[in-house]
Every structure is written in C-alpha cells, then in structure tokens.
Image 1 (cartoon, rainbow, N blue to C red):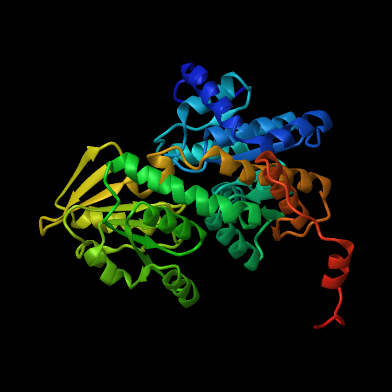
Image 2 (image 1 turned 45 degrees about the horizontal axis):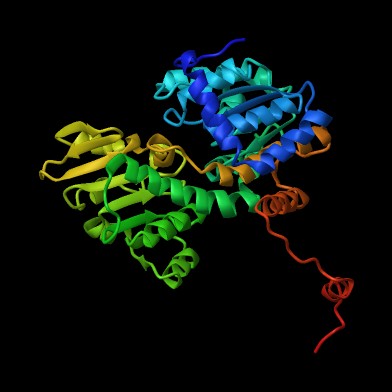
Length: 418
C-alpha cells in the first residue's frame, strides 16, 4: 500500500482519538453498520481530498465498510492530524497522503497520489482535487462518474465550472444540505474558530472588539459565539440583506475601513479574496490580531503585508508578528489559513456526524444513480437530508410529532379558508 505520512509510530495515539470521536458520531455509526451488511459501495474507487482529522477518519472507515476502495489526501496543508494519518494507514489499511505543514509542491503531489488510484467518485473540500483532475489529469477524468463537495468555497468553484460548461461529471453539493450548513457551518465553525483563536493567543474576548468578515452561516456562528463570550462584535458585509439581518441580530455593521481602526481581533469568513488589505493593516491598532476561517488563505493579503513589514517574527505557535514602518505590530494567526484547524482540532465530532453522514449517503446515491445524472452541481436529495435529521434527533433522545391525516389534507388543499 502506498502512503505518505509524518510518523507511522503515531498510530496508537491516533486510533484512540479516532475511536473517541466515533463515540460522538452515532448517525455515521448507524450508517456504517448498514453499509457493513449491505456493501453498497463494493468495488467503487473513491478519491477523497478532505481535512485529515479524527472525524474524517470515521467517514473513511464507513466508506470502506461499505466496500469502497478509499484513498485520502489533505485539503489544507495545515489541517492534517499526523497521528490520525498514521492510524488510518496502520490500523485501518487506508492509503493516506498527508503531512502537517507540507509545502505547496508536496500538497499537490499528494493530490496526484490520490488521482493515481484512478477514482470513480471524488470527495472534495474546496475543489482542489476536482480542479487538478480537470486541468492536468484528463486521463483519469474519463472514468469518474460522480463526486461530492463539502464546503461553500468548493461549491462556488464548481458552479463556475458548470456555468462555463467544463464540469466533467455530476457533483453533489453536500455543503448545501440543510443538515450540513445550518449546523456544521454555524455551530461547528462558530465554536472551532473561537477555539482556534484562543488556543493560538490565550486572549480574553470579553470586552474586546471582534470584527467578523462575512455574515453567512459561518460568520453568524462566530459572531454568536464571540458575543456569548462578552465580545463587542462588528460585522463586515457587502450584501444589504445580510447586513440588515446582522443589525437586527444586535451587531454593529460598518465598512472595513472603519472597523480596521477599532478592531482588536479580526476574522474573515467570506470565501472571497483580499478582504483585509494594505490600507486596512496600516489603520489597525498596535497588537491587532488577524485570522481567517475561510477555506483558502486568500482572504488576507499577506503578500502585501510581507512587503510592507520591516520585521516578521514567530512569537507563539501559529502566531506571526509583522512590524510595520509605523512601529505598529500586526499578529497573524495560522499563516492566514483555517484557524480552527491550524491552531485547534476543527469542528466537534457531534456536528461532523451529520456532515459526514451526508457524504456517506451522497456517495451511495451516486452509485445507485450511476449514468442517470447530468454533469452539473446537484442539490442534496431532500429525503437524505430528512433521514439524517431524523437519525440525529433519535440519537439525541428527542421525538417529534407527525402530521395527522387531516393536517396533511389541509396543507395540500386550496379551498379551505377561515
């Protein structure tokens, strides 16, 4: 078995952590038990490019239990947990290509290693696997019949490919499933982003001005958690509807140029490029803390910060301090990459339980409908979304009502008024 990891000797620690996460992923365990019996993925080669975490490990175990032949690489150079990689290889015989802190060339070498396994289904988080497949591995593209995409940034890229007519196969937008983005993006990103900032800095959020770039589901989650810890939250937005919602939720909203002067902590979650730029860095307070929790590190213009800084120093783990000509210092966390994974452990397992249940069932759906789907970005089937929500409620010990026949008829009618 081919693989590339930092240290295979870390496997025992990794296995303990994988099983700890598994205890908090009952929905995925339920699916794995069924997959073990039914083997719906028998013989299907699956190439995955995801954050290599304990939760991802349990998804890989589930796909393998269903008969899938899985290969995995990292979707971010800093998100890999090396002990998890080692355990997947040593304990579960799943080929993984991922090392924490790998450079750009190694990162893409690992993507090519997954593509060397000739996958029939791709599983992506950010669409780097898909874009590499389409741009330089057309020989592999011919045999791929479906894929899934985990995150907002990846779905945006895939919709662009679909619009340009270059998307080579159908891909399910797992991110857009209600049981994914309403929970993973809001509660998972909200908690884990704050966790990453605090682990990197050990600052007190209470009383500080926390500037949140973007009020999508991820931004809402961070704003909610920071506010709950006593921070004064400021929202940056370009969408007037989202900005209005942020105001109604009790947050201040202002342009970046204004927020730059008063913010103590900045975190971007927009999916767009250059949210914080030179003119903003120059206005920031001495000691301002800057982080990103969007998928790619392009939200902070670190190239220009490197150019204008007179000095750069690593002062804490995952904290780089840039000194500007004015003498002011800007502290950048996690090299501008996903701070919840660069400095913490990513989302809690209990929320990834639903996200990865979506991935597993979406993969089964692609196999069942092989050949009948168009080459486009596909919405997660509603029945899968509802099945996952029902399973999650059951595992949490909650029951809900069902409509009576009378109520069902009423909702389907048009002639029953007051």
